[in-house]
Image 1: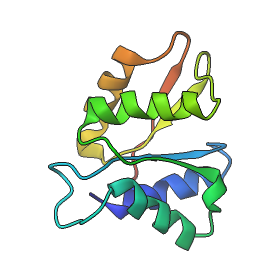
Image 2: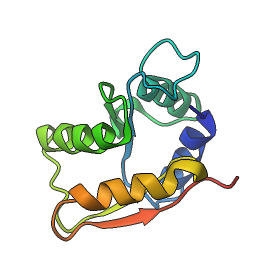
Image 3: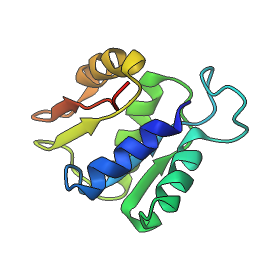
Length: 121
């Protein structure tokens, strides 16, 4: 759990790299002393940095990387987003970036492009 990831995502959003933010994560093994869903902490950090809550999609039930991706796809579909043919920017800690990208590639909708964009370490 690292709020610098949320801060990096906000910078990407504010610079126009991403038209919407998606924060995913419940309370998993990497959550440390966090008492609630990680995605809600990231949402609060984005709000603190000036991003309107309406510009953020959150998924709060996942506890591991495969669940993060699968649940996020379902949340986005339920909100009317079609990911086929879209570009998705993946941002997580450099330590997790490769695993996240490989996991997402396995389940990405047809024609989806995934860009890895971890925050500077």
